[in-house]
Image (cartoon, rainbow, N blue to C red; front, side, top):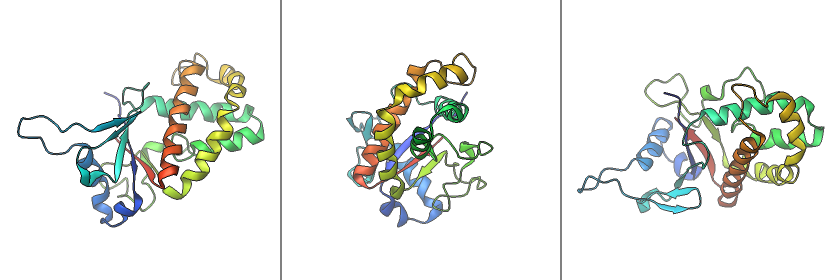
Length: 207
């Protein structure tokens, strides 16, 4: 079975008040609240791709459900690898915008870095701590406005990425199947970063 991704938009102020070792646990508890007496999980309120958790006390976070990935992490990893392949063929302005948008989400500046091993800086437990799930991605609130602005620049020039994608990624195993798959996923990340920036919240992904 492949790795899954649970992506949360979260209030960093709330998480900051918790001990570091309790922060990923708090997100997991919010996503999987205790069963109701009738053995059903409480249903959250849906708003677009966001699932607002049913307990009023968990209004400090929401989970995003991607339309095209069925919860799997692999499509995000493939898209990040595709961008790493394409970027030398993209003009400097657009390359900088996509870099700003995707870094620490699905792409790392150093291709030797594995996003699945990130520790989220010091805000979450280190990836080597086996008592806690490793963080797949973590992006603090202060990065969100820049990412939202970068997405606005990228969105208007997505078609300029088609030729680099066709040259470097089309038909390759371990890359998005089509250019439309690639840009659709970018669009969802654009919506996610825009909403997080609007709220002043950060993003964190757990397996």
